[in-house]
Length: 171
Image (tube, rainbow, N blue to C red; front, side):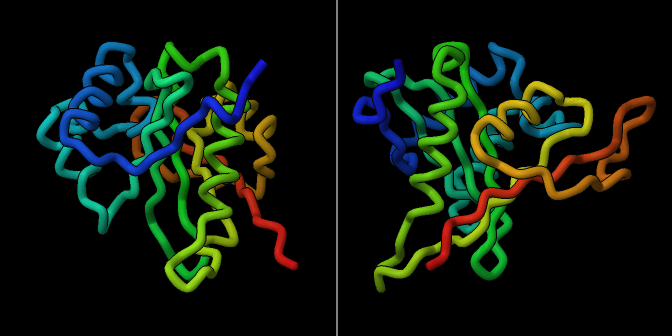
């Protein structure tokens, strides 16, 4: 049973955290799933340069009982909407759905210095052939809103992307 009080979601602080994240993603073969078609993200220098740039990404380290179980990162901000991405490590597979739900809820409930909500909507872009991630997104409360048929330019591959949204209840 998932215990939200044992789940931590913190913006990365130390270089070593992103180095460890990269090592895990490479070891577990997660780079292509998270960064389709971008083989350069497999290189530590590129990964760190992109993910550490807070103008491009806000990277959250997910820990459960103190163990790193994945990351969530938010980018492509526009108005009160942003894109959200998740990557679960093998250490977090048992809690993938509640872990993503908890991460998404904490992020969409985040407030700024003026006590205003930062986001009203989070969008998830999932490769068209990644049925498992689409199923997980639905289980986590994300709603399918559409398909972009030629989003990627991969030869002999599914080039579509499925878009999912999570909207904060606005009262």
